[in-house]
Image (cartoon, rainbow, N blue to C red; front, side, top):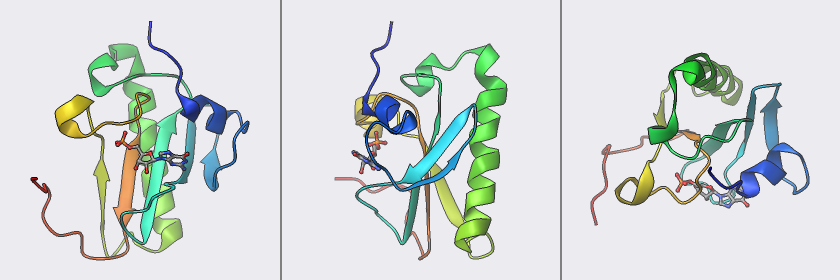
Length: 117
Ligand code: 5GP
């Protein structure tokens, strides 16, 4: 069974975050180390450690991450200019926190999809 990360404490508001959205299923907050003018993390309230752990019963929940991303992109004023949604998985994907999250990045041209090195 996967271990809870500090994202649980952010969901439960036990540690502070710049939270932008929360409902019974999804929480979104600004990344502490933004890589673009808009950098928001959108996470399921339920612990799913990696993309490899997504089950069929999670399909609606995963879809909801994207619906919330769309709302927040509009709220941030980047829906028309554009943005990128990324979910890293495991070591080569650069995943650091093992509670899946969509990175919503935008507010400037984001360049190449993959930075190597
Ligand atoms: P990953 O590398 O797992 O895809 O992304 C983890 C993200 O969590 C990183 O972009 C990192 O900056 C962010 N992060 C790490 N610690 C904190 C924190 O305490 N608060 C917030 N809001 N974001 C964090």
